[in-house]
Amino acid sequence: MEMIADILLVAGALGAGFYCFILARRLSKFTDLENGVGGAVAVLSAQVDDLTRTLTAAQDSAGDSSKSLQELTDRAEDVARRLELLVASMHDLPQKPQPAPEASEPVFVRHSRN
Image (cartoon, rainbow, N blue to C red):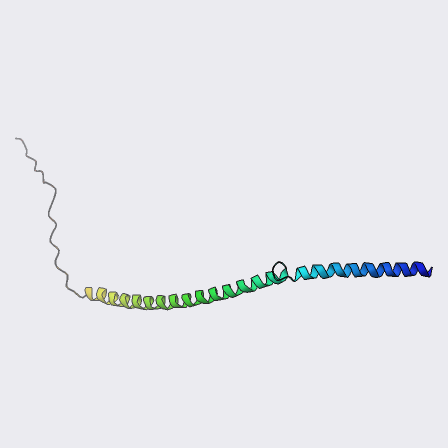
C-alpha cells in the first residue's frame, strides 16, 4: 500500500511539474515583446504618443483659427457700423424731384363720321 501511495505521489509531482513547464512556456509567449501582450502594449504606447502629438497640433491650429476668426468678426462688425452710418446719412440727403413718366403707349383718337 505504501508503494502505491509513493507511485501516486511521484505521478502527481511529475504531472504538476509538467503542468508548471507548460504554464511557463505560455507565460513567456504571453509576455514576448514582439508577438505577445508586451508587443501589443508597446505598439499601443507608441500610438498614444502619436495621437497626443496630433491632438496638440490640432489644438494649436484650432486656437490660431479662433484668433483669426475673432479678428475677422471684429472687422466685419466695424464695417457694418460704418455701413449703418452711411445708410443713415443717405436719409438726410435731399431727394431730387422725380420726372413725370412719359406715356409710352400711343394715344388713339376716335374720329366721328357725320
